[in-house]
Length: 393
Ligand SMILES: [Zn+2]
Image 1: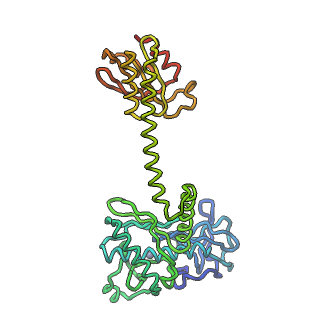
Image 2: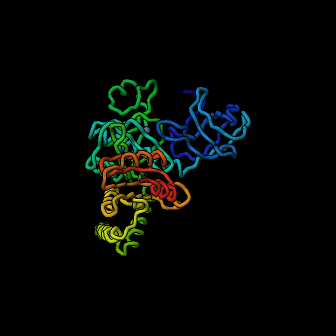
Image 3: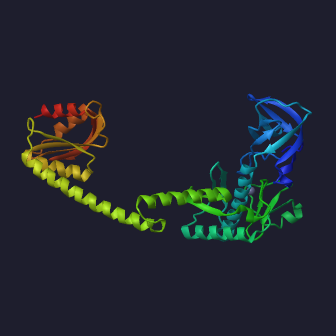
């Protein structure tokens, strides 16, 4: 790592603006890579993205650690030797400081209580994810989240120090990789001690709140999606609005929305059952008057379950001798354009094997069966399917 640039964010993460001298400015892949004598721009690293902001009147496109030093990428060149003004986008930076400190608290607590390591940390535009190499169940997650928020209420100082090597060997700190040289240790009393070069809040109270918005199994461990501060508040507000919208739609209060949804599910299940019974009644009635064409009863239905399709087919087949029932998921344009159908065919004389084979060849499908009943899926046009069966014997 280079030493030519003084990294102002290491000593003061709250510095928003600064003046600096341009040490070099070189073309780099259609942009300009600028090295400064000092900067408040944090480069991408340790899970924390690069700062955004302005430098010398231009937006900073990216800030990266490169072999030649800490470079700021700009669209237009700046004059080497000149002094320019820099300003970081503070809203984004502060949100990242809140999330980075929040991540340390959570990772420290998970290590303390469960012995799992943080093996992945990603700070996106809308949320932060942390990957742990062990499974955290709902009870463990709730406890870690609660304890992490207690560390916020206690408003303890977050401090960075550079211990000498003899002191460092006595410290039990978290570290993702073996480190050499001067090591920056970020401490959060009661929660965490970690080697880190990122930017942090001064006191845990500034994090505001830690909310786990999602937890999922990931590579044999657990991935937690976390929100802190304003991002957490915004998310909670959006969720509350969603719940209220559902409650309004169900003509109930937000407090009663779960019971209202349960009731609606039960009503829907009863209505579906009744609908199915009525459908069967209609099939029984219609099968009595069904008129086969050339020995085949051909019938198109909409979106039948596999069970219903089979029952419908047997019902008509038993009345008429032979039946083919087709059920389409998407009925739009099926008169003209090929659609995908599930089918069932039934014959009282158990001789469908050859018909099923030529049907699958003609309409590209797959399916099988035995004796009197065959089932499968095909792709075809309604009129052509009707014509096919009208010409079968
Ligand atoms: Zn860190």
